[in-house]
Image 1 (cartoon, rainbow, N blue to C red):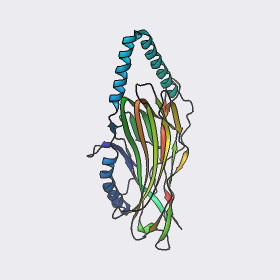
Image 2 (cartoon, helix red, strand yellow):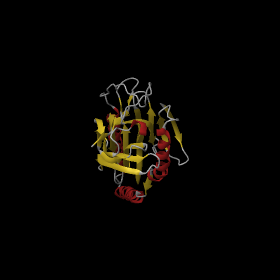
Image 3 (cartoon, helix red, strand yellow):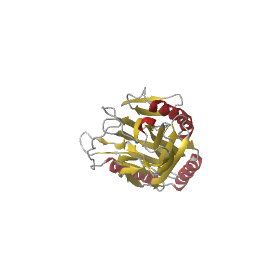
Image 4 (cartoon, rainbow, N blue to C red):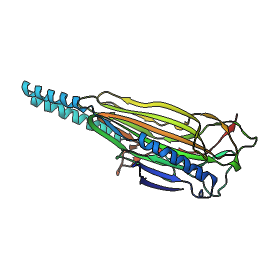
Length: 317
């Protein structure tokens, strides 16, 4: 496996890993076709953006400060602001403390020697993590898994929206097609995601939001053209905080299946299957989103979110 971190012409920050030894393989060109077709779409879809909503918040703050001056309660007002600040600091310390670390099992993200494949097995070609507009986030393909770490912070009355996308492509060439000729097949890939993602809201003059959704997708592609043959999608909310001073998290379960997809197989053409895990974020006011957590100790050690993908077999129906 080889990996790299870059910002391409479309300005999408990414961390990329691909299998070694595929340059003379029939899967390689099909993977390239799929990548060329998807990246212009991703460049438009994954931009982080801010929706202006902060003028109402600023007006409310100015109104309260004017009333404080008129009523002569500046001392009490300052005391209240300090109490809010102290509570938010305590909340951040509570979020950072976590002693529930576990040891990750051995995992290899790409094919290993000897370079052999089984009939009907979807073989890993490449994986990419897109991190557009997430300066506090890091991703790294390490020997045990893909590691996700860091946090996203927002303190503004405007609404911020962003995404994190993990996409992997797997291939099956005609020489390894299941026997029996064309027919209906089913594909049931899965991944393993462990540790947790957390969010909190603080105290601001307007709305305080910290929200996260997860989207899982499986997309079956005709290798030579990159055209979609079949696809499946699943959406779920991980946390939805919209009140002041909320703290919550989602514990990833480990085993996580992608949507089941049935399709018509043409055994004379390369088959490419793409799986995606995308996280969508909304933040407003004073809010944070944390990946993993920080263990208690000296020096403190960060516990990352771990993502692991696996090869699998398609099955005839």
